[in-house]
Image (cartoon, rainbow over all chains, first blue to last red; front, top):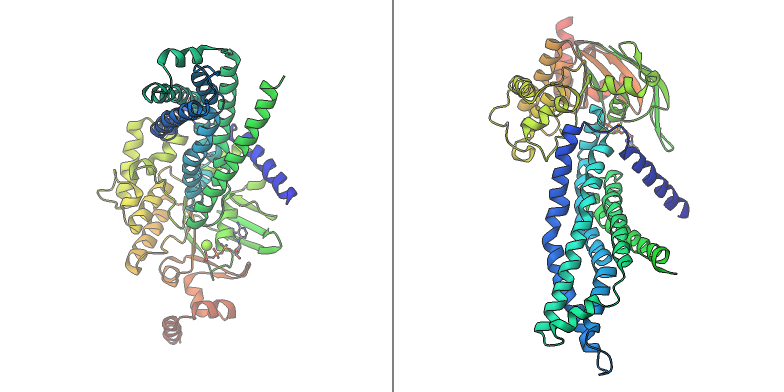
Length: 248
Length: 255
Ligand SMILES: Nc1ncnc2c1ncn2[C@@H]1O[C@H](COP(=O)(O)OP(=O)(O)OP(=O)(O)O)[C@@H](O)[C@H]1O
Ligand SMILES: [Mg+2]
C-alpha cells in the first residue's frame, strides 16, 4: 500500500520532468495556451464570482449574528470578513471547488484522449504528449491568482452588501474593520498559496487522466479519484504553508 | 523493409510475444492476422516504439531502433504513419486540422502550403464535404478515411494500421482495404496491417504473418493459404464454412 503510494508519487515527479522536456513548437503552443486560458480560467470566472459574493455575504451575517456582546465593536464584522475571505475562503475554499470543476475537466479530457488512443497518436508522430497536453495548462493557470483576486474582492463586496443592506452594520464601521490591523504579509501569504494550488490544480488531474487505463467508465472514475487527491493535496499544502509562513 | 528478429515482450508475468522473427516488405501490404488476444496490437505497438521490447531487434531499412539516439528516433517517427483501431482523431480539431497536424508540427511549411497538401490527401482518400466538420460529426467510415489521410500526409515510408476496417460494413471495409493497398503501391510504402478479417486477407494479403498465442505460427501470401497444411492457420481460416468451401473449390481447380 505505502509502496504503491510512493511509486505513484515518484511517477508524478517523473511526469513533471517530462512535461518540461522537448518542448512543442512555439507557434503551436501559443494556440494551446490561449485555448486553456479560455477553458480553465475564463470559464471559471462566473461560478467563482457567484460563490465568492454569496459566501462573503454569509460570513458577514454569521459574524454579525454571533456578536451578541455589546462590548465587542461592530467593526469586527468587516475585520472578520476580510480575514476569512483573504486568508482562507478565496485561496483555499475556491481552489477545492476548482479541483472539482477544472480538475474533472482536465482529467476527463486527457483521460478520453488516452482511452481513444489520441495520446498514442501524438507519441507515434513524435510529439511529446506530456508537454503538449500539460504544459499549456500550467502556463494558463499562472493567471489563477487573478481569479482568486476577483474572489477576494467579490467576497468582501458581498460581505459589505450583506452587512450594510441587512442592517447589521454601517458602511463606515465595516470599512473601518476592513482597514484595521491590516498586515500586508497576509496578502503575500494568500497569493503564495494560490500559486502553489494552481500548480496542484494543473498537474494532479493531468496525472490521473494521463496514466489512466480502461474505457469510458474508467474516465469517470479517474475524474472522481483525481478530485479527491487534488483536494487532499491542496488541504495538506495549505496546512504546511500556513505553518511555514504564518507561525512564528 | 522492416526486419524483426526474435522479438519478445511480456507484461508482468504474462509473455505476450514469444520470439517473433519476420520481415515486412516495401511496397507491399503486410498483414498480421490472428485471434483476439494473440498479440497483434502488442506487436504493432512494439514496432512503433509505444511498447519497448524485452528482447530482440527491429530494423527500419537497416536502422536498428534500439541503437538510435532520441533525435534519430524522432526523425524516424516523422517517417511513420499510423491508423489506429478507433481512428484516434483529435476531437477538438476539424477534419482539415487533423490531417494538417503532422505538417504543422514537424515541417516548416506555411499555412497555405499545408492547406494545399491537406486538400490533395483529402481528395486522395475521397472525402467529400468534410473539411470543416469535427470527427464526431462524420461516420465511422469517413473517420477511417481521415485517419488514413492524416497518416499519409507527411509522405511516410512506413504505414501501420490497426484493424483499419473493424466496425465498418463489408463493402466500406473493402473500399478502405483497397485504398490502403493503392496508396502503398503508389508511394512505395512499407505497410503493416493488423486484422482478423478474412475478407481483408483475401483482398490485400500480399504477405501474411499469422500469430498464435504470441508465436509466429505461419507466414506466406494469400495464395499460399489455400495450399498450406499448417494446422494452426487452416484451423483459423476455416473456422468459417464459407472459406472451407472456397478451399475445396480452389484445390479442385489446381488438380
Ligand atoms: N498494456 C498492456 N498491459 C498488460 N497486458 C497487455 C497490454 N496490452 C496487451 N496486453 C495483453 O497482451 C495480450 C495480447 O493483446 P493484443 O492487444 O496484442 O491482442 P490482439 O491480438 O490485438 O487482439 P484483438 O484482435 O482483440 O485486438 C492480451 O492477453 C492482453 O491482455
Ligand atoms: Mg488489437
